[in-house]
Length: 383
Ligand code: FNR
Image (cartoon, rainbow, N blue to C red; front, side, top):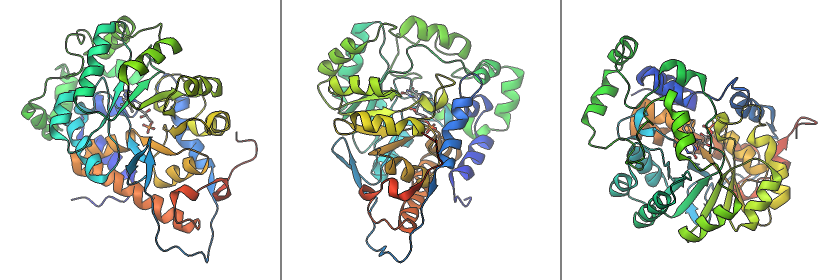
């Protein structure tokens, strides 16, 4: 069992153990990848203020997201094709999250279906919806999520059309992988991954069966998305979907204060300040840089979550100190999953909790709710 001390350890193992096309799918951004890179380098520019001789006993990272009790302010973000990083990936990640006590969000574009995950996960999870043109299909997806007891709907707003990711096109990304000399050579060194896949009983793209034709490879994914996803999604439609769902609603992909105000007006329970992990609008600013203006605009009306660029507990601390209630991790948990399956996702969560807990203590804080700008040193002109 390798010694895991940080997310980078998991990332190295993920790269070694998972077919190149799926590792690259996870570890890439759109076009020049500027936004993808800045999501992490911007976190690094914000520094923490050390405090000493402060009582650091009885610390707690517990909090709530949309009223649900959680072990620490981190949820697992919705990630398409999670089940290609490791066989049954969505089920394993949902289990690890449930046992740890944080939310898991199942993507519309998952490999395992809503029903597969519900049958094998010990706790309710959240469902992420991409809005399709076919309204009946959207209605059925929402009904399936309700029937599976999903306790929140995460509506993603920043991918009605796909940002281009060069690596996926160059690798010929497809699920399952098409057998070419290059993929066969690659798979030969990742035989454990292949054995797992051969053993799985799941039907691929379990949520969109019937609409999945043409989705299997990257060169067609962009035209498939353009065909299937609703390019006319607007605030009126979002309000209708809220009514159709009738439960807790989280709007994901907000990066602008005016959009945040509209999200609050429509009655969202929470918003996720996010640029989709740098996979959509290349050139957009990092989520952490946009966070304060969104907190100023709607922080008193709607719960604010943040993702994009979180690789450590120190990053979580910074996001909370700037006004986020909680955060999500995408790649950080994928690295764990690709490295070691369920144990790897648990390891990722443990690494982040420890970093958050110890860093809070060294900042003189005992409770995640007390974090604020007083904990940070921010370069002049940063925001
Ligand atoms: C994503 N993300 C995403 N978001 C979503 O709403 N539905 C989806 O199906 C996907 N798919 C997806 C695949 C992969 C491989 C990645 C890396 C990301 C975005 C995801 O929910 C989240 O916003 C980012 O991953 C956050 O950034 P970090 O934590 O990965 O830096």
